Image (cartoon, rainbow, N blue to C red; front, side, top):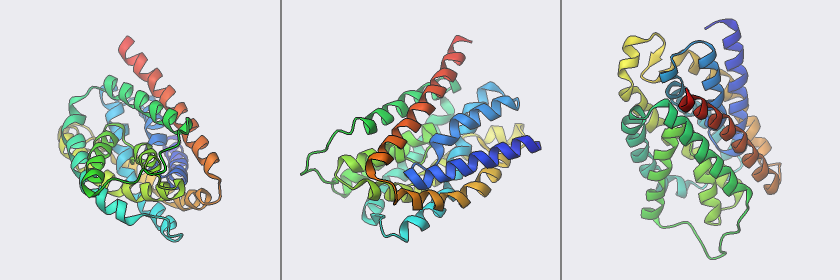
Length: 272
């Protein structure tokens, strides 16, 4: 990597870390579209770009989530009971996604899936549909089952799961600030399970391409992590100062923008 690439990655990591702390989204929703752009710019093969962007993004969440969780924990807003109930399912879903399905999908379909699902998540958050007052988080079995879906889908888009877990918890009448904080804690098991899957399913890339650990491009990972762990606590502190309505609008607008870019990339790939 040249100096320009390193500077871009550091700036991207700083933005992703801040977003992870602010919104509990692990930073992956910010990273994947921009990593796709950077890797394409530097000549990475088209059939590898999206896979590498998603895998590198997800692995960075291992480190960002720790920094973000520490900041949220200081305010006592993490619901550890939800984390404990959801984590086993998340690990199962992540291993299935990163270790099996991920390698079988082409870059075209991964881009399209990312765009549509992230756009839907933004719309769900923005419409601000009020949950029934009586609704609560399901029992341990139901929460763990939800974790399987969140871990699986997160692995396909390289995100820490906040785009699913935050709306799900809010739907179950968990306060938004608690949902964001709890989602940050869920980012670690999601990233751990999927990263292990990316390494195993992409072993051929490790052999044939320098800098690859499975589907993870580790030189970019190092630069991203160095910046993101510094800014994640800043975002976490800001999350507790902004009103709920503002947080929802920021979350939704960010998802719409990233969805539009990846939909454009998917359209290019299919038309090409």
